[in-house]
Length: 47
Image 1 (cartoon, one colour):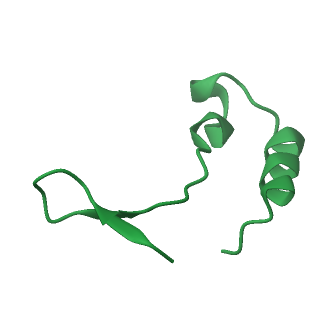
Image 2 (spheres, rainbow, N blue to C red):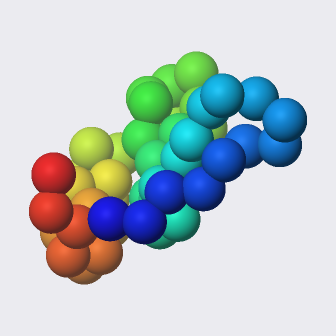
């Protein structure tokens, strides 16, 4: 996996990410669990 440095910090992040903040439940817009799982599976990410 490829990583890049974040600005002037010592932090690094992977180049490819999966933004799943909306899957956090009612606090983030009420995304249903089934829809979140479907999106993760469709992304074909390897955890």
